[in-house]
Amino acid sequence: MSKNMYVKELWRYPVKSMRGERLDSAEITSNGVAGDRLLHVRDRRGVLTGRTRHALLGLPAATGEDGQIRVAGRPWNAPEIADLVRAAAGPGAELVRYAGPERFDVLNLLVATDGAIAELGYDHRRLRPNIVIGGVPGLAERGWPGQALRIGDVLIGMLKLRSRCIVTTIDPDTGAQDLDVLRTIRHGYEGTFALDSWAAAPGTIRVGDDVELVELDPRRPLPRPGGWIVGAPYLVA
Image (cartoon, rainbow, N blue to C red; front, side, top):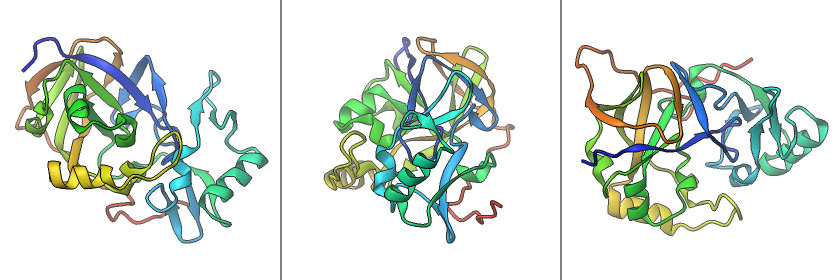
């Protein structure tokens, strides 16, 4: 394993299934990256995501200096954004705020590595990572489940490899679909890529911080994967 691993990229997705924002630093909390996926799209049947509403993945979302979320440069609750969301997700679609843990598909952090991304050969934004670790040889990440990454005082536990879905086939810039991306992941990587992770010890991390792969204390309780996509009930008022 490389002794020179570091935080290469940090990402936050203020709106679930919309384009993310790249960060210089991130506050890692027990509920993932602070400000991550605080809004989502729904209609009368429940939550809507890029799995079935591919056009959502091309909408840019970012957090302003005032802490307010903006979509396509406008306040998320502006009337013109409501029109934009309906155009992307259907006539009854609307943006709503919700900070409960069910908003994450599995766990609240996703870790990817530069070595595995290079092996895959596609734009890594398709994977929607929160943390990209640099200085990692090849597919070393595939042996990391059950271990942890120490970044200063922060400890990121890694539970398992992430099962990938149709979202990876959508180009984050053009919206064009390339089914070969998911075929490659299924046939070459057993349908999994990057790591479902969580904050075992919270704190702030920055791009360029040193990263160490460490053993996870076996006495530490493991998180239970959950989320609307994997079966948690949709109970948002």
